[in-house]
Image (cartoon, rainbow, N blue to C red; front, side, top):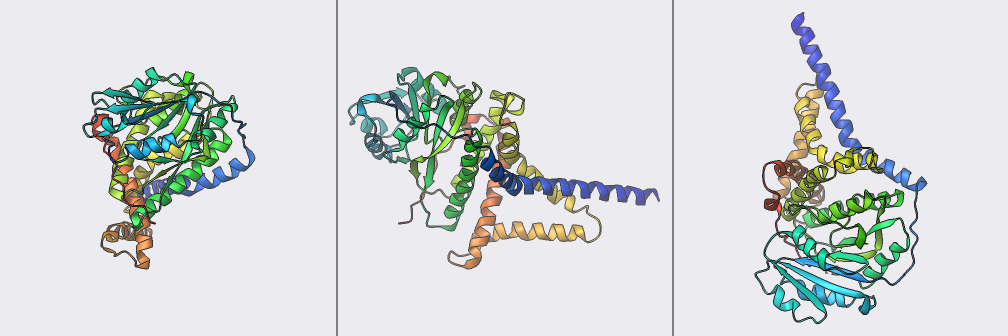
Length: 388
């Protein structure tokens, strides 16, 4: 009798944990976005936009950017903004290729050379030299739309806006996995746009964002996510961090293995940010509910998936076998995608499943932040070719 009671209790616990983990997964992936769609219709905070010419400092940190630096500086020169109000500061973070020689070919561009120390230190050096009222941050690889800077500066006519982030457009990739990474990015931008309508996004797009100079503060040298650290400095001073989809930068598609490494770094950076800004989980965070549902929920998602699989073996009756079989088929589809040729219809499904699994594996690997130095998580992103 005691054995039967123990087995029954284990089944009840397993069922409860299964339902809890399943509900958490469904909420983070589907429930919260649906709720956000409803909330963003009823809690809109429009941004007052008006172009008021302001002095802008463009900060471009770069490490071994020879393949892209010339096109990038030409892209900056083509911006539709009064030239006399723009200063361009390129910070070379210990580049060992021809990056610095190419930068010196451009008149009116200030070059700061540093020993290799990481992006945060490079940006700190740029902040010390910047004299503009507005700081415009961008990366070396992405090309800027000519109207991007003007669009972002217009947002600062609204006194509540401290940071304005542009939209990163991923060009169409030739391979399924590149297209699926782009699909994930569109899903992420959809969420960010609605958060911006309500109040603020937690962070900006590193390749294209601007902020008020007086709100920026130096970053710790080991900072992994400068494009979240700096916007949060403005956010916790009471300002909004908004997304302006009219300001665009364009990037090449990335392979799934490259996206995996980038995702490990960015999610590890989210763990790090909780140390820098513990108030993210406290009452000072006026976007607390959205942060927990979106950013923190994403960090917890792989653990919920592991718990779901583990407790499936303890479900009573035939439910356990059904749950284990369904999850086995799901993960098998991700593994088999490697062998499915391009062009087959089933590739569309298996590629999406594999992309999801790989991104969850990256979120799980992000806990390596607690065991290795932040510097070891930086890798140069490899990009693919855009589809014509």
